[in-house]
Length: 246
Image (cartoon, rainbow, N blue to C red; front, top):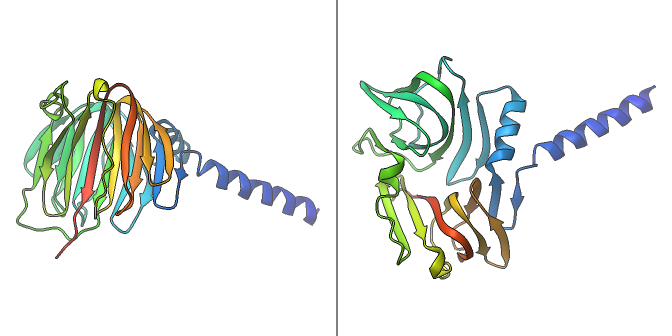
């Protein structure tokens, strides 16, 4: 009987270990996740928040609330960015109220009270926290809707639009027309996370290469040369760069 119990315990541990990494692919200096797998994992956890990335520079999670539910989150001690994947709600930030809908990008400064209210459709948002010490002098919040996020799109050149730039992070949209085929190798001295929102491509990171598509989320460590190529359709990717104090 003890041997049987031990056998089933080992199988259970292996099953949990495998299921907890369904969405993760990684190399020595990068990690890649799939939004659909993350959503399934979060649902399976029966919890509103699933943290799937936790690095020295930043952490990242998937947060979901059902229609007419109560958001009980408290102010955080780190700056954060929301990217609304689906659903509709109002984000109350201090005394302000912001409509959050698919494609919205919202920055909220550390220690500023905020919560989702008037959730009219089940909402799911990607959340990125910067681990850099925040600056109290930065603005409390900034929101851009989907049209504002893509406002500088140009079919004739690759365009990087850093529409959020505060002490802890830079966040923007990188737009690459299909006809240009991609970009050249880029190497940064800070970590970054990429969220693919449209198009398909191959993503080269050092000696590794993966296919990416809408819903792909890729964290890349500082100092790793990387670039997108072999585009299928106009390619758009949201990118967050962490900043360091000092």
